[in-house]
Image 1 (cartoon, rainbow, N blue to C red):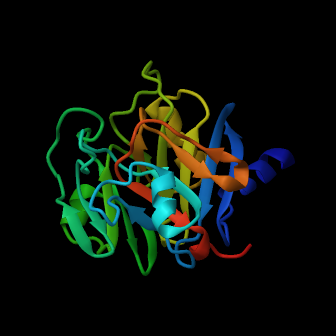
Image 2 (tube, rainbow, N blue to C red):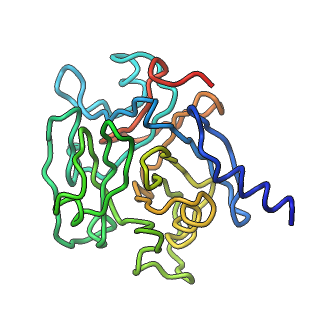
Length: 242
């Protein structure tokens, strides 16, 4: 019993600085990176100085310097334009999409990762449209994994749809942002439980299940593959000292 409590505390305790680590939850391996967004400057990256999408972590580093952490951050079209809302440092490059549609993005409710001076927040799309929170930067994706402590209503405990998945969860006060990628194929229900039950986060958002990538030098990880669209990351120069 004591070991179980200590394990839960290790998963749920807030980080004071970037903390990437390998964990297990319900016998499934995950790699998580926890950021303290009220003291560390999380950023979104889409296009380089030449106006073309970065597409890779290496391309971001070529222009901005070393990344302490980065992850793909939302779905995109074939030309790597974001499918939904995308705001970078106050500049809206793609509009909010509120209607249901095909694929995971359109499996409502969906949501967005919102970054501002108060921290990082996962916000449901219609709540954002209603003025729930202003964002300096934002990337829309879907579906929501956890909405105010409840799993997405369309997720099935016995689903046979399994993929390597990645996403982000945030605390209610914006002080914790935990990015996670599964170490093996998981269902939506399993992945959502990681955020709600394993990490004690009330809101979480799905990023992808086919282009799921993590750059985390502190755990010797740098995933490669097809070019990405939006990227979320923390420059080494913006990371707090542990």
